[in-house]
Image (cartoon, rainbow, N blue to C red):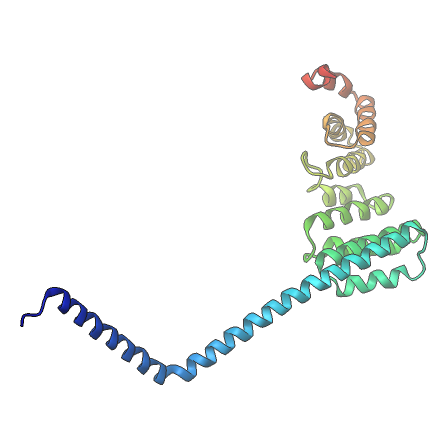
Length: 236
């Protein structure tokens, strides 16, 4: 009796599957222990990672609640022991919470008249590369504002130059301090264009723009007239 092509195909498939099962069986007998160890290590590592993630999220939630309670107490005038609580967050929190705690501590020091402590804290934040740049920038601005009267004009200009750029959130504050530093250094020709640029930048807070417009005018640049010529101003 002749064997049909379909029967041949089924036979070869069964043989092929049997060979594969035998190969898998030999591999398991040969590498089974190592494979089991690797699997256990993988599952252990995955479990550890998931636990770490959960712990991290729980700590972040606790730190957020702690800071919120601190902010509420400061707003309510309950500042007794605030520094110690802020120090605890600054020591044990993640970078964002640490920076927020230190900036808050410096602000409290300013409110209580302890400028020296505030300057030290702001400087620490500004120089800490673990913190995001916005935290470091605001610390730099506030540190410089507190130290302004004791700094040489060149030091002010050098420190704030990276922030005194149109489009930077701190352009108004940094630019104003740099322009005044130029005036103190006897270089009004360098101060005037900065005041004019600040006066015309609508992203800068209105109070700073108003001061800059007056200063630009006193230095011979009519920033009011320049601004009035813009389409936006005509629409207003």
